[in-house]
Length: 559
Image (cartoon, rainbow, N blue to C red; front, side, top):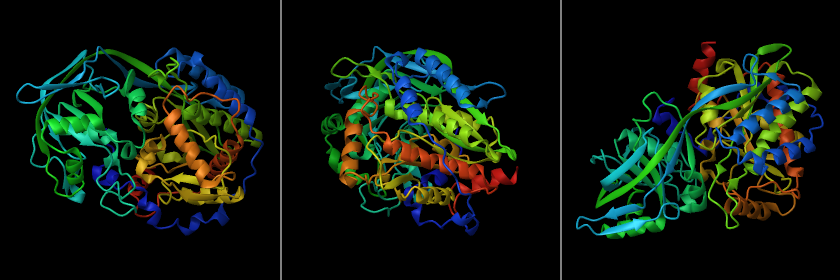
């Protein structure tokens, strides 16, 4: 469902630091002073360790791993003192489609003379389908390079202008045209990614244009991750939201190709890849027919499944019909591309057993402190790794009305690199929740700062985005990039190591030698922000001029 116009969503960029500051009534002086109870490091360790065990098989939705995860979280929420959050039930069903591609062919590219090249599944290309079809068969589909694959009327930009791609295979660049800008200036947010840069948008637009298939050219810097992440994330079982038309409005096949593969394809077409990619960054770019055809096929095992969000609530003492959210996703990739040692379980210890453990530890903290004025909802969502499906489903089918949801915080993948002097805020400057976070950070002697890599599009890659699109202010931050021991160099080295060796890979496993001091420092901030929201009668909004403010104002006016 397209909840906002693309004109609105395209404005979503981290240049919003330039937006107007929070209104005077959000001054930190009016915020309640919060005493942080003893938050349990042992709980953080125990829950993270448990959810990372091989017996959970990587916590894939719809698997035995989900059954174990849901049962475990319910037991921990009960023990922490929460009540069931869905009319007496601890869970909310989230209807999903499970699709597993099998017997995947090589990608065959042929010229007009019948000369063909072949590229291997997994190592050179990945492919899947959003359609509920038992078999996908793309035969000699004409190929067209459509630049970044963007249609943005409000920017006067249309990469599909003058070309008919119905039934064809489009080749698309990842990220935005001005990705390489050093600043945040540019029609697409400069260095900062807009929604137009996300792979999800590329597939959506190709479908609207009637393409049969779309292949995104993988390039590590603009994609923000290596091919290993694409390979592990796009092979094996995939999950989609159930749709009324069985996915018929989608393309037949969506995939990625290595940049080296793209170079070979363009060379076969008599084109230079780098030259065409440079041209695609300029306004007025015209799509380029490649005079090649693409062929591929695969079968799909399809099953309808109801995965589950897990919901616990602590009822407020004064305003129980006003709600504050804590969110984290419990799912991970399940079984994935095997490591060199044969391990094929993506345990997801950091991503996101840590965030899920934080829900439990915070619930225990709230019980120690006593119920706040407003109700607090602890929401462990499913299928984040499949496109924020669990949070999207809750946001569109809320148990507690969004018009009565004050705001909240999202927790995704705590840093294990130690305590930091600062904290990294994703979407800093967008909402009045910044005032709460600044007050919380000041209490802990830390400084909130904008994320250093806005080009990676983190704003679109976690569950807060599902709520933001429907107007609910959510704050999302991570451990800082200026460590007390080692500074920014040490933080960057740790982040690079995780992304290269563990992110979305079997290496993301629990380590008994982890330093939890930075995690516990971050956990205090999450507690303070949520508790401040739960102890005031204020309704923080998006800052004036932000694209989500109108949605929020309409929601609140109809309350």
